[in-house]
Length: 204
Image (tube, rainbow, N blue to C red):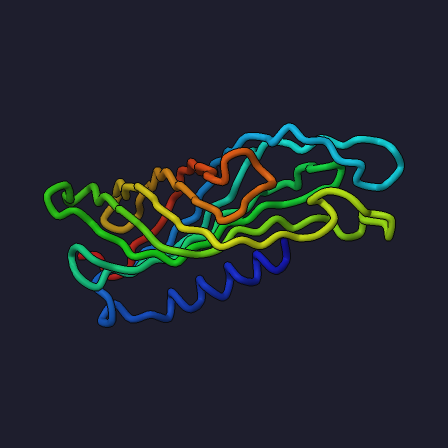
């Protein structure tokens, strides 16, 4: 978790340093939600002691942090990262999933008003499953929980910034992740739901 928070602090500092002159609009947001994918319903003798441990479905409470920069009224770029707040259990080992992406952003002009700005995002990034290495004895011989897992992902999202003031907004979002060889879960197509609160810089 410390590395996640260090990353968030660095990204926030860089985004605040961006001048609105470089982009028409810069957004920063922090949200909460969940991500879901089914279980493979497999069982593994993770520790080689004859005890079978089940694989689980993806779920739990996720944090979501991101920023975006609009370089015109319709087109921009964005970064997003989502991670499970509390460690879950997979194959008898504690773990934490994480998704991140770098996206292009399209804002449909006809649907945009003073109080509402829709976002259509598409991009690429990664998905990671970090297992608690201190729980893994040298006898960990079977199953995906024996090592961390990193995957390439393609990301799609639909979101909307609902402005409460000229700068403060609420941001509901649905994120779809196509994760390459995400064999730890049933479909490899986890869906994430979140609601965040954010602030726009450079908005008139």
